[in-house]
Structure formats: structure tokens, C-alpha cells
Picture 1: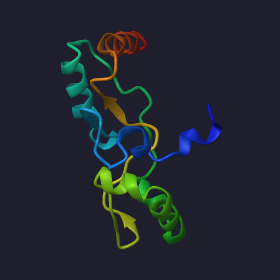
Picture 2: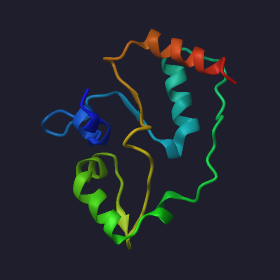
Picture 3: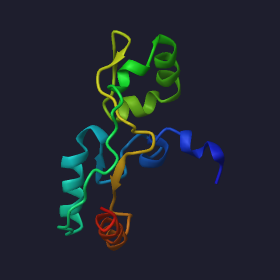
Picture 4: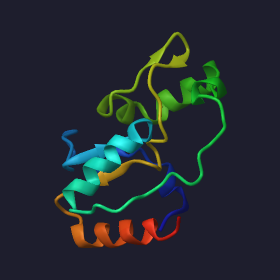
Length: 125
């Protein structure tokens, strides 16, 4: 795997060449609890999964300045458009780690494998 794959826009993985979203569900970190519930219902998983490593960092917008916003906007313009994120007055209107922490549930994924991973996570608490 190319080392730079991690930095590719998510839209390259989740959309076809016309920009149509190819997955059934995209969860976002800012909606983690509710979106995880959607995934759990979809795979018939009813166990508990806690949030073990909650961050005490400030809201992400505090870490961006005009230059970094410009860079992110240039590199990830398609992600911002597809997933509904915008910049407003040099700060994020909405933000998440959509570049690496997006929950994805697709008809192409093996639901039993997802259920297995959820079971494994619940045993780590």
C-alpha cells in the first residue's frame, strides 16, 4: 500500500467517477454515538461499545489558521462538498476526522465481519 493512501480524499474511495456516493451509510465522528447505533442495528449487534479514549483537546477549529484552511480546502475540496463541510469566516462550520475516522457501512462490506469486530471491541472495555 502506498504510504500516501492515508491522505487521499475519502471521496476517492466512496464515490464513483461522477461523484455519486457508493456506500449505504457514512457515519461521522461528531455524531459517533448515534451513527454507531445505526451500524449496530444494521448488523444486528446489541452489545455495548464504550468510548474509551475521549480526547480533552479543544474543538478542532481552534487548530486551523487561514493557511491550513486553504490547504485543506485545496486538497480535500471534494470531501468537503460530498460530506457537507464548509469553511465559514476562516473556521470550520462543521468538522470531523473524515479523513480517517469515518464509519462506513456498505452493501459491499461483509456484515458478519463488522459484527465480529464490534464484538471484539466490546470485550476490550
